Image 1 (cartoon, one colour):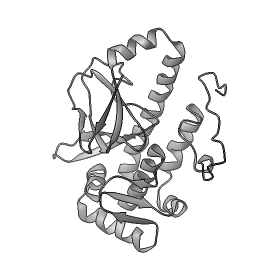
Image 2 (cartoon, helix red, strand yellow):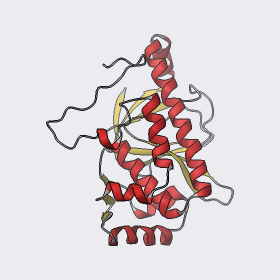
Image 3 (cartoon, rainbow, N blue to C red):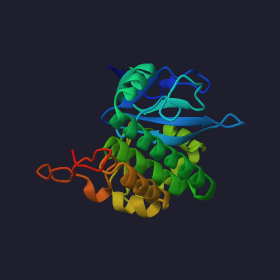
Image 4 (cartoon, one colour):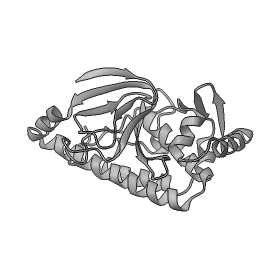
Length: 236
């Protein structure tokens, strides 16, 4: 495995490429699976941060990618050849279980995002994306721009500017160069749709402790984090 620092908008693989590398975002790094529409517009269908991985997760690799994977928030990624990862899975049933569970959660996020994009407002979807980015990076200071957010939502920049402007006016978020800062998570959740909670609930059932719920996030450095659970539900 090798560690690589990647800038925002770096392409990890394109739709149609053979998947040869698997990427693990670290810290505040964030990536997304992006789907190209017929009219040329792009739309993000899933976010991946420190809880997951990109490349050969569902298909076991070595088949053409259906979506483009792109870095949304810059940072460090760990890369391993997908073939090497598959070889490791053959020697570890625990590793296979973890990736099977994560594949289930990733697909749940894709399904819920599809429903969200079809039924909810840009304001709700913006709140969902910001909450998802915060959960996956562990940072209230999300290193994405409004232009990137518009690309992720598949809408014009003017829509995002208006929505973020309203949130900023009410003290829900702040903006600075290259980032959006979440100031009031509880109020942002009230703006968001139920898709945020639905995705979190599924992660909590399938990968408890990997994708922390809001009430489990550490607010006091002296407070220990909740125990992680292994494939059989044992703390460890």
